[in-house]
Image: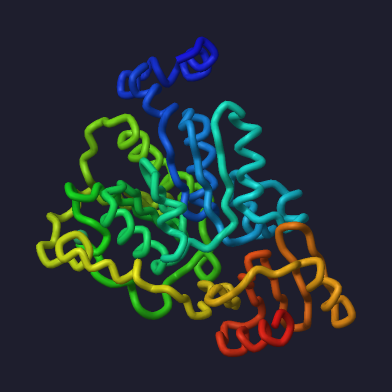
Length: 337
Ligand SMILES: [Zn+2]
């Protein structure tokens, strides 16, 4: 370790749980943050400050004013520019710690890119807002032996659980299938900003233990910062019938195409299956006669009341103003092709 790093991380090195050896491990580690919203933007900043040498931050969405109360990395200017969260995070992290490497990836994490994005992670932190992606992460992590830390928060409560493949129960041991029906979301139930940082902090502590090789007792932590109360229980034993970690059937890795999906509680639909790269400048020229268009290198927004389409260079789109996937697909077909 060079003298600059030794000084920079001195208070963390002094902490016996990490020490100089732990810090060395962190400096050579790679953490992937899957989803850079409320949880993920806290993960990214904390791990950058802790000196994790390489960070990959994956997010498919862009910063909006309603994110700012709880998404710690972002600023008003990011929302005003509709910056993609991954790009805004990369820019901000580089200012927090210029001695580490950070890569912002503007993409939807899917079965087709999970290998490329999570393949050499030392740990994956769950900052997603949907079960589909969590089950994908679990399948990939279990299949490749990559530890990951599940986290979720809504209203004033949240929960976390680390998964160490081969040693602890995986997500599907505990929850064999994603919950069905409507779930409370930050958009429908609201969210207290500090529950997010509390949940994310527990996830980061687990990630630091994993990356430094410290012993980790696998526990499910549930907490409520408004009503009060924190509860920790040991995760159950591994399920000998678990489809993922026992039978090694990784169905979430096999999906090759994603149908349009409703974005939880947002009256919006994401189109991500069978899309192809789009030249945003050409699209802008085509749409300008039809309505208001705002574009930068990262995304194009087209307003056609009561809908709003945001199109990304990889062809993915978010259609706001409807939760009808058929209508969203039709609007995409109508305006994007
Ligand atoms: Zn399992």
